[in-house]
Length: 308
Image (spheres, rainbow, N blue to C red):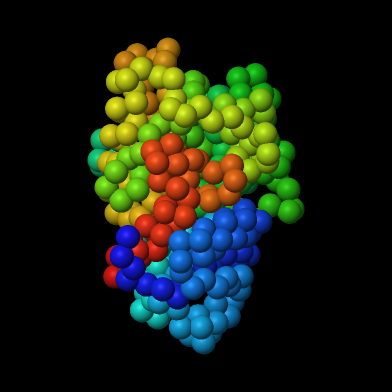
């Protein structure tokens, strides 16, 4: 692969609840890019990020931040203003995908099935059932299954965590119909949906711990599902990526209910900056198709741009 860029800043860390995962992603990406022949340096992103980038003068930025500020359009806006090419999606796609309810509106317009959901205040969700159980309560603008709770049939009330004084995940929550079945995910690399992975876990559901703790989940790659479901997931992932205006690498998460009429597949969300840790799904799918981790990171760097 010919190189447009050489000096690469990997920004990681930040101050969202996903800081630790971001530090791991950034360290892994920096190592991979060094192996691919780039001049790499790492920045733990804090409020002085703009000053540090101005002093360092990178050719491009590899954005390994996760969560608020890093993948919701904020840091993308800073990089646009500074004129520094960066990996992954731009300002609008990042902010749309991070806001789960607005992303659902985009999915609806693109005829991408998504579970019924509505936005309520945290206090309203904590005060009593705002939807017939089973349903899911999740912060409207967080990633990595942070602060996600399943309210099952027979539960007397919503989770007590919603009333905690330590809650720092926003006052708006999305209450969404719970879809039974199997957890599937598809990574998209540019204009190509890679493959389908099924995720299983012995925990209650695929939450933050299941995603990032060693042994927290099992990945079945490729997923053992009918060919028609594989094709449907690949198609929906690419359509969701394009409908939101994503670029680079994204990952769409699905619920597949084999007992429902027409074996329905629902798109839960699109992650515009999938994790790059040892347990992460997008690098695993790329590797399954013969793209090594250094090759994947190099491709993302060469795909970096502004004005998107």
